[in-house]
Amino acid sequence: MENSKRSTYITAAISLVVILVAVYFLFIFQKSPQKPKPTNSPDNIISADQLDISKKPFVALTPVSNGAEIIITIKNMSEFDRIEYELTYQADNPQSPGQKIERGATGTDVNPKDPEYKKSILLGTASKGVRSPDKGITEGKLTLHMFKGEAEYRSETPWDIFQAGSTKGEIKDRSEKVAWSLPSLGQDYWIVTADTVGVPQGSNGFSIKDVALPVYGAFSIAPDFKKPAQVTIAVSSDSQNPTLYSYNNKDQSWQKLDAKFDSSQKTLTANVTNFSSLVVVAPK
Image (cartoon, rainbow, N blue to C red; front, side, top):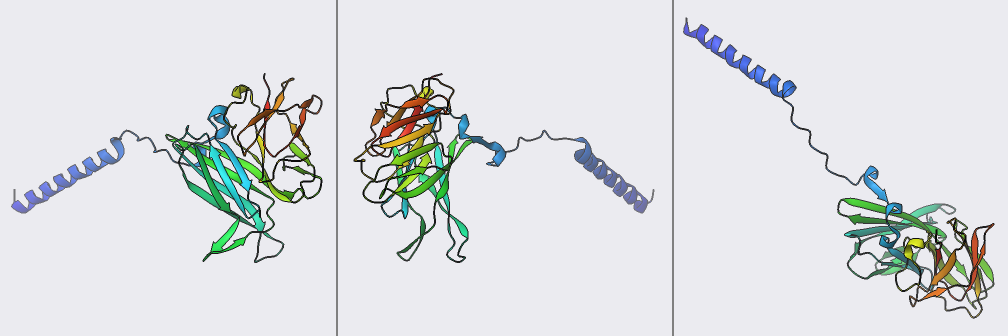
């Protein structure tokens, strides 16, 4: 056989082998499928409603005297490895009168191992030491991202802000499930009403498993009332014997309130002497 023909045959044979190997790996040989890495897509987020009540953090939102800042306080965090939050709200758009713009702040510096996290959030902007508080704020939303291992639990709760107190009046949160009939406090104070996510900790005299969520809080630097205010709160449980407790956000003290239960309206009504968090205890 001539050398040129022999080379041609060898080259053709090698080419055929390469083609067969390529076909085998591309169409016949299959690797075992790899499990996709978990991501923080919405499909992988767990609602905080799935958490046991005792494991939910307690959150307070307290406005300062001029209403330009809110102090966020988070307690009972030890269940989680990491917590982040976004506090958002709608404010008047300074560039377009009559229109609203979304503002907000984020927090990534929460250490769940601490007994308490506290930070002041400016409701506005600041540049070179000059602060420009936002105007026209009436409500907002607090989103908590709570991480444990590879799981993320998410809580989204509304909050409302009012200025009241110089005259008698009533304030309600936007759900209208809790209302405060206030006496005159002598001057106006800023007040935030909000779902506290979890339950305050401490000696409370009831079983936490009997708490009917949500817990509604009213937060303010206003002093104790000289005359009692009346609070009415909707009861979400079917219990026929609910009771009402208040938690003083300033001194962390508990009080069992002498509340009247209206079974037809499913509401509890009681007198209170300060802004506080209201805890409905409804044994099943």
